[in-house]
Image (cartoon, rainbow, N blue to C red):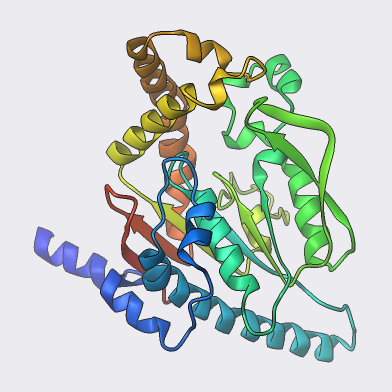
Length: 321
């Protein structure tokens, strides 16, 4: 087949409608800006800048879209309950945020949480990361998985599915484990409680992962089965590498200097050795995870936010089918 014809067919069959930043910004309509510049700066992560202009052009329109989705989902749940003649109570609207290490998932999730919580109805919005559902280091070491930390097999998937099932069922005081990046481990005895939020944002590397489907056709739930909407934050491998190394080098001058940090040893090596170490970790672990497990889930997202070199969202793709 002619290359031009093939490309045209691919574009025609794409399940996404693609917008430039300017086109997407118009969809804000009259949605009010509820965050100040200072608040936005407080929400941005290390080496993941977020300008108030980007909040206005990208995240305000997205919050407006999510308001429509959430309202429609409540109507669907009510219709189902009417049909089944049940009264299961409130069903939270769950948003999944996926993407590579160093792409800025945490910043995006925090900004969305603040914007959504400031809707006129003042919904209760909670945020969890799937890091807490990693197996403890002791188990990863015993199973030979420390070098695959962050890969799908390093997570306690049954525990995560149970958590999401309880949340979706409207249960009260559901607990999630807590992960410390300082100690690079799950914190024993530490939990956060999620108590019937209107909206829950779930952020993680592999939240759109499906794994292998069972040959016998058994019903096996995936994490994404509990999502009402999903966002994938995208960037080129070259940019992700740069952002990872830059963040690693910044942490050497801050958190890594604390003797209690798991990574304290990296604060005592030369800059050249640190650069080499960061490149090696990225190449041997994070890049492999990205190519094998994370990037293949991108087409499953409802919305793809594509970043350029300055961490600015330059393209938005919204699923139309």
